[in-house]
Length: 137
Image (cartoon, rainbow, N blue to C red; front, side, top):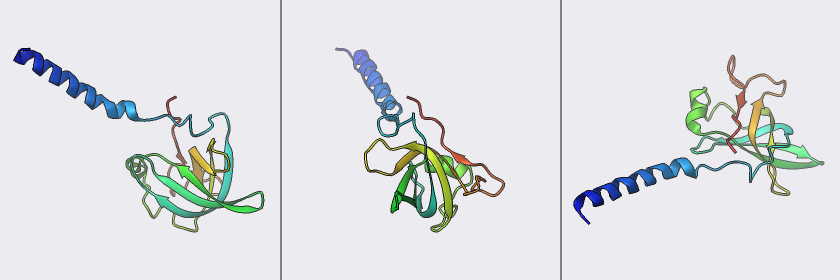
């Protein structure tokens, strides 16, 4: 092979590798049931702002038992653009969360959730209600 063919192959391989992160993002459909909604309310235990997904943890009572919910949120970069910080939901803050439940039996997970104060008002004063975009399927 000549040098031009090697250069062309190298460019094509580089372009294919650059596209991998775009293709690698997964759908939530295997993990969460988009045909159902679940709502729970309780005090925040922690908020983790991380990329590619942040997580909100809070406690609630289900069938007379205390459980900890794990809510998958968007990336920290998106949340911080809307004004969220690690201090937005301090432990003990009461939240109401409505989202798609986890498909895993016995688990208490949600995604694509709307997070509000118990009365339905936004978490941020004068700000937006945190609501996840519907992920592509």
